[in-house]
Length: 446
Image 1 (cartoon, helix red, strand yellow):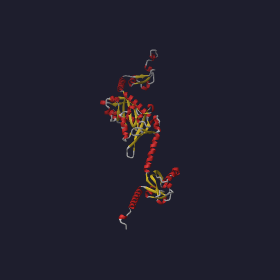
Image 2 (spheres, rainbow, N blue to C red; image 1 turned 90 degrees about the horizontal axis):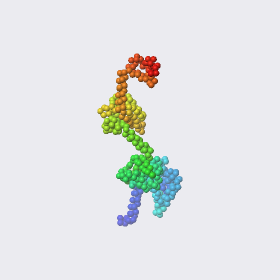
Image 3 (cartoon, rainbow, N blue to C red; image 1 turned 30 degrees about the horizontal axis):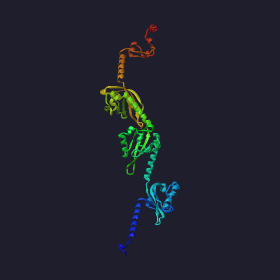
């Protein structure tokens, strides 16, 4: 029996290395899918992880060729034969691979194919170590498809964190009238008005992006020869695996026609608001906004008015009136209304407005708000009411009859009919001469 001192040191070292190698293989086998192939590319053995991943039992795959795990199109590709030729020459191959499990289930794996060498350096088999990346790969492909779809319909441009252009798609280049060669390597400020590019706000914009903060909104940008383009854009920092920003991708759409129309509408609205009273009322009938002309007409500030119910500036009989209730039913259908309306100003003062009501419907088709544009006609209305009152007083006190320009009777009041002892139907349409002596009626003077 040998003593401890008689043990060959090199033999002990080899045993230790063999044990360590076996432990490493054991650890890999517990965490990864492993399969072995012979030189004919046929399965020799596979561990439980591999069988579970592909959905097979061991007896179903032993002796079968590797191509049983591949799509027919992949096997028919010349690259497949070259792949195995490299392995059989002793070259390792690794990467992401699409494989087919039982019943045609597609599986994405991250794998390394490793030639196994004998003591003479000859390849005697192939061992593959693989991890299932199906979920991550599917998500990545889905994301790539979404990005590709966006790129087909939107302008896309990429920058480094300093704002230097890395690339742009055809949609963006067409929008700005540039070629790729003219923009790549240039700074983003080439699309920005010079004054804006010098502002602290612009520097802060790029600092935020470099810090990984997302930006979106409507932006005015300059194309070739100063062409002004309005875009709806998102600036998206792209992060590495450690969560650090590495570049910025911008997706944008041309909104120039809509923006110009909005600017023109706003200018018109501003011009109208200078001389017209404007009131905005929500679908809940609460006041949303008031312009200075309306403040002046009502004698109340916007601060005091905003948030009040519309009825707060109406007389009770008007608020309960059929006309007012019916008006809101019309608004719900999106139809405009014009009317002379009475509203209650400061200290209960009656304010008359010649108003147009314009209902605004939301994207859901429901009433969002009503914009009231009006002129203060209080003075004219009071004068009209005064005149009407005087006419009514005259009508009550005197006999009144109306004729057309030919002398035919149009109407007569009760005082006249009583005086002349006629009914209204007796006189309407007849000539004035019925009330005149026939001899006088035949004279030139008459």
